[in-house]
Amino acid sequence: MKQSALILAGLALALGSCAYAGQAADVIKEIETRCNEQMGAYGEGMIGPCIEGDVRAINALSEYPPEYGAVIARCMETMRPCGYAMVKTSVDEAARSGTE
Image (cartoon, rainbow, N blue to C red; front, side, top):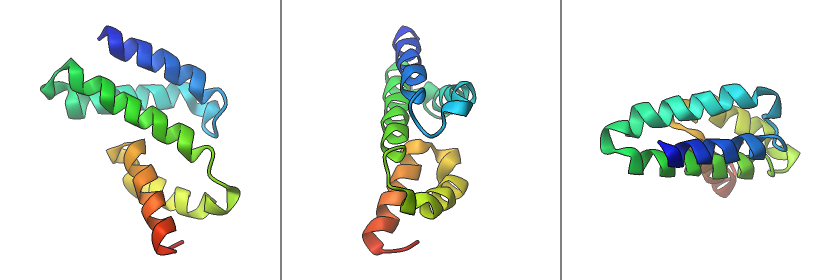
């Protein structure tokens, strides 16, 4: 669990500059809970990469241009329960296909 705690501490710092900064504590808890629930059965070694993937995805999503707002909102609504990495994948796929 030590690795996950360090990753989450890094996430707290990263969220300070992203679009979700106002909800940082909630997002951290959401990621921690989801990764523990979805990956915990596979061991601590799987929880860390899950958290890291979501951290990278949140950082990437916060850097998308404003015109991606609608597709990000749609992907957040449908894919957020699967994690922010899946949200980012959905946004990227929509961008590639020209879907908004």
